[in-house]
Image (cartoon, rainbow, N blue to C red):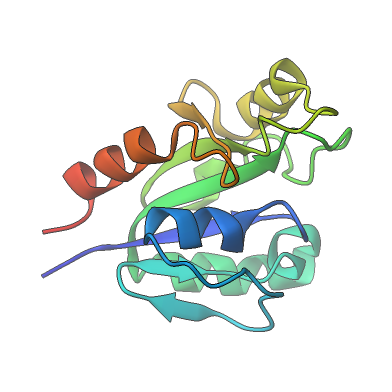
Length: 147
């Protein structure tokens, strides 16, 4: 049985673009309106991680996953995950920094934000545009979640 990877993060954090890069899909990313299942990945709307009213939905959906990927946009100056957020999930969490190639990216700040939410868990630095870090992340996820 395969295990899915659930991807969570703020609105426009780059979740859907990251998923397209991981799945090697060519079509452009679009706004995720509801939970979307694509191959071995669950894409979640950004509103689910920005609004505490949806945390219960994230926790329930996490039961269908084998790993949680928490996405932080390197261009954001705000953390959308509460401290210790990963502890509420029944499975391992990792962090992914997106938009690392953007001129306004602050990777160290993004990592600090993720550390508040996931502690010492592994963090990958990526760009869906240049594909920096995507293959390393895909290999990790496939080794830990996919049959």
